[in-house]
Structure formats: C-alpha cells, structure tokens
Amino acid sequence: ENYAREVMQLFSIGLVKLNKDGTIQVDVNGVPLQAYTNEDIESFARAWTGFDRTAARGNIEQISRGSTDNRLDPMQVVPDWRDPFPKSNLDGGFIGDKYELCVDVNYKSFLKKGAHYRLLGGSSSPEMTKDPSYFSDPANSVLRSELDPTSALYLRLYNGGDYELDVLLENDMTCTGIECNVDTLRVVKVGNVYYEFVEKPCIQLAFYRDAKRIQGRDNRKQGQMCANPDLPHAREACCRGERYREVRSASTSYLYDGERMTFSTAAERCGSLCIFENVNNENWWKKGYHWTPKDCSILVKINSEGYIAIVHDTDIAYINTIPYHVQEESTLNWFRVFWDVDGVYPGSSDSNNCAANNCKAMNDGSCLCKTSVTESPVFSDTSAISVTEVLSQLFIGASGPPPGSVGTDIGNGVIVYKLDSIVDERSVFEASDDKGRVFFLKNVRSTVNIEGWEGKIPEIYEAEDATTYNVTVKSSSSATGGKYIDYDLESYLEWNVAVNTPGTYKLSFRYALDSHPRPLSIFVNSVEVTKEAANPTIPVVYYGGSPSADKFPLQRCEGDCDNDNHCADGLFCKQNNVLEENP
Image 1 (tube, helix red, strand yellow):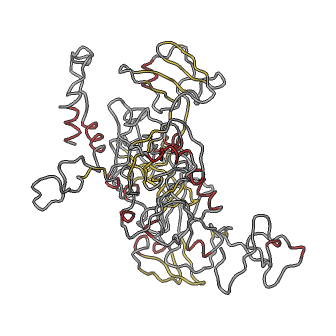
Image 2 (cartoon, helix red, strand yellow):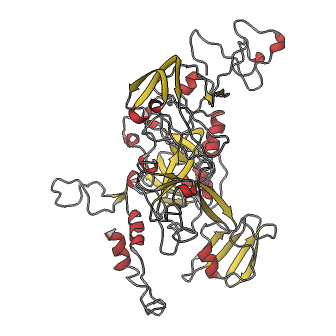
Image 3 (cartoon, one colour):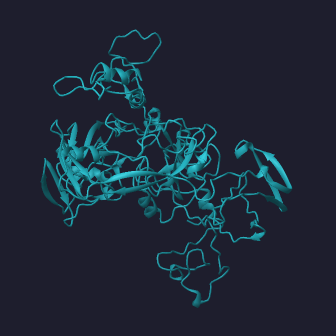
C-alpha cells in the first residue's frame, strides 16, 4: 500500500486534481478535489503483489549476510503469489480497460501478424511464462513443440540460421503440422535453439457464461474450480462415463508438455470427456489442469462495504479441493466494484439484506449470491456522439475494424465501423485521446447481474444430522463435517427440507469413501422418485459368442464382435488378451 501511494503522491499525479493549466480543481464549495482515495490505494496495492527478488549471481559484489537475494537485478513476478482479481482504476473502471479480450485474441494467435517470439537459445525453459519447476530438472525429459522445417513459421524463425533475438511476424501465416492441431504454443524448437511465444496483452473477464469445471490430476487434491471454456486454460482428460476403468483413470494425448487448449478442442481430441478420479500417465509432474464436462457456477460474496469476493461452485466430490481464493468460506479476496446505483447492493441496509435478495447469509455477515452476464450495445444512435462519450463509456478493446465493416466518420473525431449498416454490438468505434493514442473499442457493455435463488437457498444436509435407522456413524477427515454414515439395505436416512414454494428443486447426493455399487431408493413426501446416474453404464446386450446377423452392426459396448465389420461406423472390434483392458 505504501508503494501504491508513493507512486501516485510523489511520482505522478500528486494529492489533488489539477486543471490543464496547473491550477487546482475544486468542488462547488471550493474544496480541492482529491486525486485518489484510500480505496484506490488498496486496489493499486493488489497490483504489486507477487514480486520476489531474483537469485544472486557471481559477477556482482554485495554483502549477503546469509541471504541469496539479488538486490541489483529487476525483481520477478511469481504467478502463484499474484492477486488475479480485477483492480479498479481512477476513472471509474478497471485496470486493463480498452485492451482486447483474450477470447478475441487467443485462437492460433501464434500465427497472426504481430505475434512475438523471444530467442531462448539452447535452454527450453520459458522466461515470460511459468513452467513447473520439475521441467527444469535435466533428469526429466520435457517434450517441446518441434516445428516442421517446411512450415512458414519455422522458416521465419530460422531465418537462414541467422537467429534474431526478437521476432514479430510481419503477416498472418498458414499452419503446418503440429501448428494445425494446437490452440496455442509456448516454447518451440527451431533447429538447435528454442523460441518462446509471448502472447499479446489481453483481458480475461472474471465473470463469463457457460463455465466448466477443471481439476488437477487427482480429484482428491486441491484445484477444482471454474474456467472459461473459450480460453486455453486446461488440457484434455479422455474418458467415457460408462466405462468404469476410464472413470477411475482417464488418459491424455497432449502434443507437448504444458499444452493448454479450449474445452471444445479437448472434447474434439478425446471424443468424450467425463468426470474422472485421476489421470493415468507416465509422469505425474507433467500434468496440469484438465477439463471436465461438469458445469460450474460463478457466485459472489458481498460484504457490508459493497466489496465482492468471487466464489466458484463446482459441486465437488471431496472437501478442501476448491482453491482457497475462490472457496465459499475461506476466500478473503475482496475487491471494489461499481454498482449501478451507488451504495445499493444485497446487504447494504437492514431492509435490503441477504434474505430480501434471496441470497445466502454467510457467517461473516456477507451475502452469497448468484451471477449472470449480459452483453448489450452501448450506442444505437451515432448522430451526436463525442470523443469523451466514446472513451468514457466503452471499455472493451478491438484489434481494429471488424472484417467486412464500413467506416463512417461521424465527426467530433469519431469513426464508427458498422456491419449491415447497423450500429449494434458488432460495431467498433475509433477515437483518439488527448495524448494522441488511437483506440478501437467494441460497442459492448458487459454487465454482471446479481441474482438470488428461486424458492430455496442452497443448503447442505449432512448424513449424520438426518433422522436415521440402522446406520453407523463413522469419522473421517475427508468427509464434510468430519463424519459419514455407513449403512446396509435395511437402513434409511430422512431429512426435513422446508421450501417456501412448491416446485421442482435440484437434489444432489454425494457418496463418500467407497467405490462399490450401493442400491438406493429415494422418496420425496413418501413418493418414490425416478433417478438417473450421472454416468450410467451401457448394458452389454449380446455377449458370449457371435450375435445373429440381424443384430449387426453393433453399437459401442453393445456386444461381442469377431471383426470390424460387426461394428457400426467409426467403431473397431477389439480382441482382448485374457484380462487386457479395452481401449
């Protein structure tokens, strides 16, 4: 906080706002306007998290006193230490406003005009992105992307053997080989040297639609959280929900170590994704995060000051697997947002409390609420739009005019690029600020809507708190509440769930500490309800010898086959060797 304050007070804007002629700006009462507030200091302080000194080196003299810190070279950012959440700026927006969204930039950006590559030399360890520490161990064999010597990208980086320290692609390039099969690159091998791809700066929104759950190599370990399916945030984990062995141990088919891809690429590469227990591969240290088909919800906690903290609702199978910074009870990562009506939000008053918004009241006094995201055009009429309005109301950057658009100079130093002669969310405005910087801005406002639950706020009903018959209560540190129920066919559990309004509600039952099938009947108000497993098995209808000809072709897992002709299109007949596992 002290550094954030000093940067403003001593080295840039000072304590009060100034006019262009250097005179002090005042309010209607003649009181000087503050240049920043304590809230600004707190927000900017979070931008300085994650810095650490680099290691000492032998060609400088310093008094170490046992420390290995280097106080001469620039500090480095440790990603795991850095605050990843939005940080408000001094203009009623956020740091990063007017940059492009990563969802608009990322897809194969390594082949686009302006793509930046840095020469690493003989080392394949990147310097601008983070690899696991195990990748730098010479004893570990790390698979890097090796470009096809005939590809346009290879030829540009190779440059006839005259390697350049920095390369900016002059034109878009066509993919060749591995370039066509990946969403992004990290480190590439060119001849006997390595280049690091440096992604252009872009913004990842903290709130987005259709989030999917990602998890690490083992669903018992911490790391289950939401991710934007349109960004390369995780890798594939291939498995089919109806195959017991695959659910227990999924497989991967990555093309280089540390590869990341979008959800759709992972699903396409695998053919089928499922909620798995662990990932089966040769080296555990090569695994990162993996996509699952499980939907994920982004919630918010709102405190009495109107600050929010992001919570990921991943419907986990084990406790303590959601990272602390997005976990409902443990997160302390509060940050400032700008409400449509200043000072009005769930929990802002006794009458506008959590219950009044159908939000969950938390033990710390905050409200836990649902969110949704809507996008809408900001301008629909361009008859009298000023540069000030464009720069103050549009926040999402664009790379330039949309392909196929027509630009119209509407005066006041503003050009609007329209598709189909309509000003809508597809339009892009071009404007320059008073420093001569040119901005291309999308005519879109992304709004986060705070919502409550309809009818029933989510609650967890522990088995040990139910009315029970013929059960045994056992203890386990991996069970929520520290206990679980062991029961047999003659047992039952009963919960009394009170709802305000009759209707359809989601009940999610979680088993723990066992992998064996257990018969279960569910009754609601004494009426048995039909239930469907999340990963139902496909029954093997025909087995033990060849089916009759009228049963062909067989679908997946439908029965025994003798050759590929017995199988439906796209399927193959796998002949087992004793107890060999089917692929």
